[in-house]
Image (cartoon, rainbow, N blue to C red; front, side, top):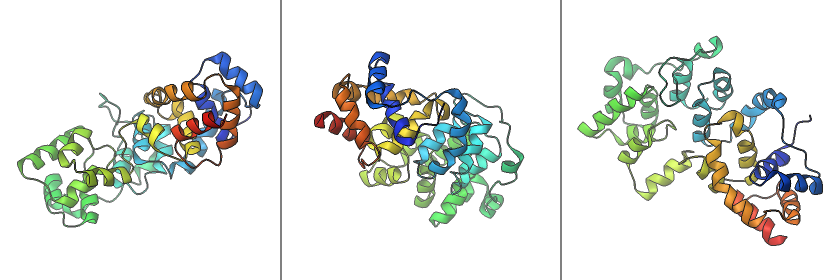
Length: 279
């Protein structure tokens, strides 16, 4: 089976949101190939890090939530600038809900843990965060927050006496910061905008509907059953009503979608509605 190109993968994800009879008829009309088979999983994983550099930070977290050492090795290339996530991966910290046992870590990754900040050595976790006076110091101190217990410690310290603004900001832009703690740190629209600019999303449905270009988002979602299988259904559920309303079983609309896919710069909902309107 050949490797589908990015536009074919993107359309394939949307075709998975309609019934199989309609999908087969559309493939016959447009010449699109069928879904990729499991034999191409390794190929997808090997190339994943090349597009991962453009992914929102939250997508990397969804992949890490699998607690799969092989997937962690893929994500490692993407999180080069996030010392906190890199430290957690290097130490085998699990990200999946309810998991506590440390993960197996590739020796090459374990040896690349970021340097431990001097402020942490001198003052401990909370002390290092309270000493923060710049964003650089904030990111360094925040990189030592690794486990759920650490996040609770941070929350209790902030409740006792608010942490410095840079420390709060550095913690908030960690994709693994618990949403309840991020909400405690701030709810102002400007704050929410900055968090979003850092690539922090509400969930896969948010990614599917509010990010673009559509072909890139859909290509990632097409690999969702491999990269974040526990979360990809949220994206599918968000797009399914739009696909059924604007494309449905209309072969002409799907043909227009195929023509637009590679060059359309908007979001997926806009793409789907545009294809339906043109047809």
